[in-house]
Length: 84
Image 1: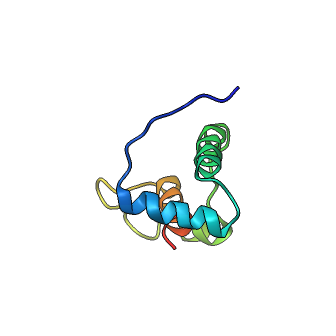
Image 2 (image 1 turned 60 degrees about the vertical axis):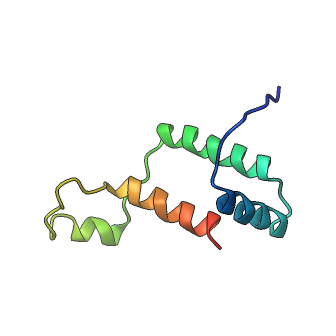
């Protein structure tokens, strides 16, 4: 059962997201729903660092207040899919 959701998003982001959706034959609502589903499923399985990252683990001291691996991956995925 579908339900309406009203959100406030920066105008530029909406325009770029609509363009992205058109280029990929999708609706903006469909993209948002897919993203929300991915967030929900992410709770069930965390992204594991790759072999290279694991081999480098501990070689660099973490920055205080720094982001963890999963936060960085999520940001890069969003950049890739929403900012073209």
